[in-house]
Amino acid sequence: MTKRFLNYVSFDTQSDETSAKIPSTAKQLLFAQALKSEAELMGLTEISLDKHAYLMATLPANTDENLPVIGFVAHMDTSPDVSGANVKSRIVTCYDGMDIVLNEKENIILSPETFPELLQHTGEDIIVTDGTTLLGADDKAGIAEIMTAVQYLIDHPEIKHGKIRIAFTPDEEIGRSASLFDVKKFGCDWAYTVDGGNVGELQYENFNAAAVKIKIKGLNVHPGYAANKMRNAGLVAIEFNEFLPPNDIPEYTSGYEGFFHLTGIKGTVEEAELSYIVRDFSAEWFERRLQYMQAIVDDMNTKYDNSIQLEIKRQYRNMREIVKPQKHIIDLAVHAMEEAGVTPVISPIRGGTDGAHLSFKGLPCPNIFTGSMNLHGRYEWISVQVMEMAVQVIVGIATSSLLVPTRFSRI
Image (cartoon, helix red, strand yellow):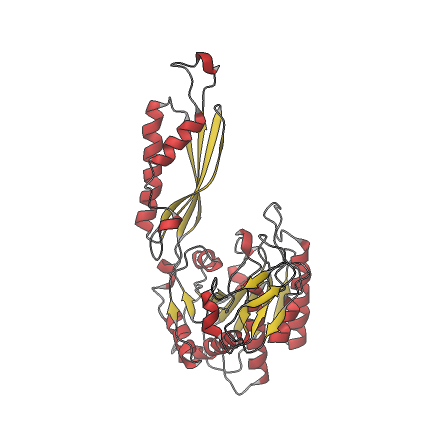
């Protein structure tokens, strides 16, 4: 597993949000082609790789029992935030709980003082970089764990399981991974994204999400003669933001609390624009947040001659409403974790996930841990032992389908 993972992170697969293509970078397709070759060497079947870099494959069932088809999904791209080229990874064996010097020359130090989660993994083998790039464990760890679990099942035919489908996707980091995902072709009763963080994470709740833009038209005249004429769009923008609850922002919210997040502001006297992301776990309160913003705009438009425009782009919904009614999907993951000696940590995702998009496309898809930590940055690291636990959990889920007494209808 470790050798496989270190090979995967040597591929530079950053996605590019400025590109309109899928995949957004050609190098993702190169990695997909390498994975396709590996799947062929493993003897997997129904292998397909399309021009958009969606790779799917099958581990056939080795039992005649009529079992559900379970899928495992991970993404190939890495974050555009930090370079993923020329990753220089190394293994810190039997971590002693002290600072890890990633790059002595540049004084880049991975310290438990800043990242206390490290102390939960003393005695384990920690994979890090030289501090000049991200590691790429998000989500090449998920790919390595899935492939290793599948290889384990191939090598142990005495372990009975139903049909297992795997899929590796592009452009997850820029929010496009599920857009061209062919759920019907994948052909699963349900699936799991293997894209979580620390050991034991099991997630089937995420934010309802929207992007909101407030566009304001001003009226510009010479400031010396502006009395009773000028409408300063920049000041109107500031006034709008002041109507929002001051504590409903990311800096002051956690758990199941939602927020309004101002992500951008630009403007002149002539025109201004505010960009927000709006998040809430409750569908009702999510709608109330959007309605509240509309109410502010409506009220201010009576004062400013209908010069303010609100645009809403809905992004994703909370997959809880799809997954929770099918409790067996979560129960199987909990059972597999407990069998692997892992304590399940069921928590909401304070963000989005491919699983949310796929769930609403007809593929219920909660998320399980990979072990990757400090994602999207030069301090990214992962524990070999946690990765091994993730492999055990994937194997456990694949074989736990034997506990399902009847075939579930294809959704």
